[in-house]
Length: 205
Image (cartoon, rainbow, N blue to C red; front, side, top):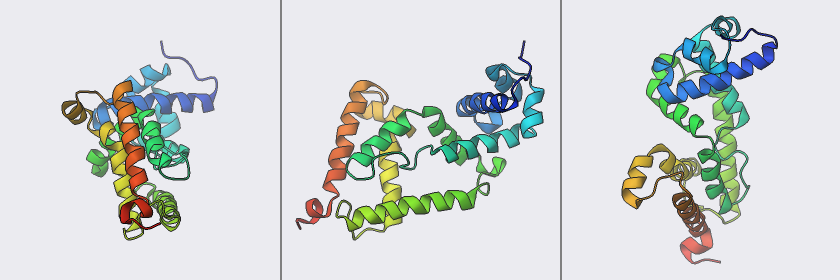
């Protein structure tokens, strides 16, 4: 039997955590409020009470996870080449968030994700672009590349095995998430990032 609410704040946290798992597994369209309530061990009516329904809950999940810094080079070392490999580790430690982002891209028109929190998200990415520019000025990233495009390339390289694990397993014979693959890819990212330094790329000191 679903538990009664004794601590409203804790109930909200439990619902959001349960919803993350449900949205990661089934997307917004496939997720069911009843299933989220079962995961949380709480009465289904509490979801309507706290969030106004499934869409409100979905937006609360996305807003909370972005405030925590679900990726985007937040919380990793400030300098290359370690930053790229550590971002891969950070994202790999939060697979539900990665899956939710994939679902978000597919379901944006239905969930309103294309407009919700856009200004806040843009400000956060502006900070990441500024980080790329500082790394360029320090000679750890190429100065002749557009910093915004370079940020997207760096994020893409770190996330690729998490987004397409089957392709990586076909190509390498090892599954992303396994110790062997992760060690190999981590070493590759550090080496790749090291070669991006101006001195390595152009032969200049």
